[in-house]
Length: 85
Image (cartoon, rainbow, N blue to C red; front, top):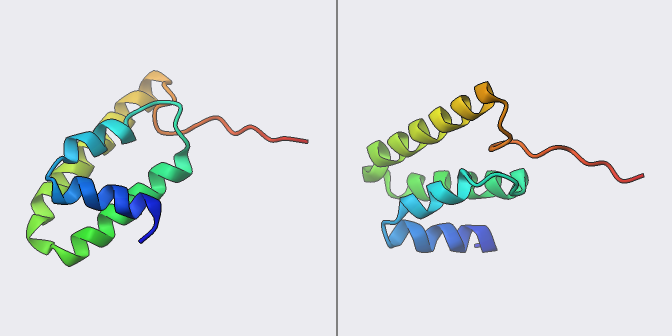
């Protein structure tokens, strides 16, 4: 399991999805790392399908937060692309 997967697994087994939610709602963080965390969460859900409702509620809340932030012009879920010459 990679670093993000290990981190998510520790939160998952400790039943602290709120910490994961806080991380994903933090503006200015690398979008790719957020994607890895969401992928790891989905893989863990595959192995513990009895937590499906909990995870769907988690995603619903996250998407609601992102939608609201985007409508206000906040960059909570997307970091500005910076290209280096």
